[in-house]
Image (cartoon, rainbow, N blue to C red; front, top):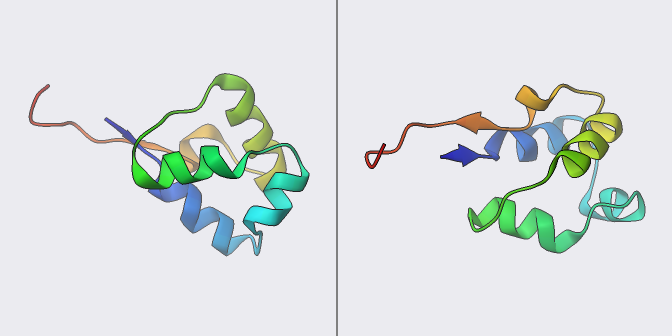
Length: 69
């Protein structure tokens, strides 16, 4: 399972807000889904987030092996 906890830590570390991300093309509903673990993101969104937060994709997400795997 891919989790995005690192994304929210990074947003805070970079001093960014949901408003800043929304103003730059990231939907608040996407962030809510990621935070709640009910959604994923496509490559374009990963690209935008990396540009806005000046980071690499691995800084946003992490794979955690589930017991089902």
